[in-house]
Image 1 (tube, helix red, strand yellow):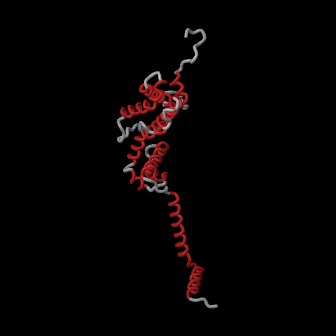
Image 2 (cartoon, rainbow, N blue to C red):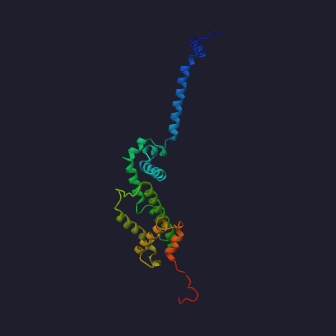
Image 3 (cartoon, rainbow, N blue to C red):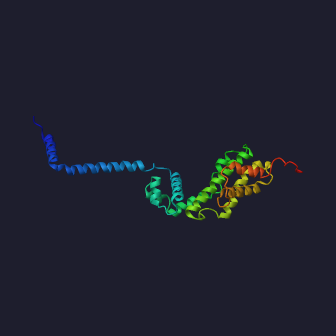
Length: 238
């Protein structure tokens, strides 16, 4: 039964394959398959496109995690791999690795970072609930800054206010949250803010105490009730 030109050409290719002529075709086919597989793998490993602000936050979050885990010598290539981005994408957002670290420290030292959550409680929340949420936030910020100092060393962000100004703004932010509860405080909201800041730092930083308090409710209990007994001791004149 006759075949025709196409069939004859295919038969000829098959005969060449039988004599070992297929090696070039096989290599070419494998190369194409490998390139296609790599393309698919790259597309799967790369993070989806994000808006500029979200991409910036994502790069900062990944960098901070790597700094704490591996130290300050982590490379931008490692950051890119962990973020699922091309290394060039990082440099379109941040000029240098130092610029990323500076942005991380500026965020960590932001005196009103996370305040939106507390503001959402409103003045209707009772004082103890407000203080527990506040101490939770202050402890998280303290631990974050401590971890960054351990990884990178002391660093004052160039894009943030001077440290003393940051501290003043931090006190003011806490005082603003306490003002609706001023009637329940024995001291002014400004003084209460400073006391609470100092208490949280002293009871959270492992270099300042041998028994850090992890539960914010315990710190709030000390702040509100002190260390004295609520009822007088038997036989006392109180």
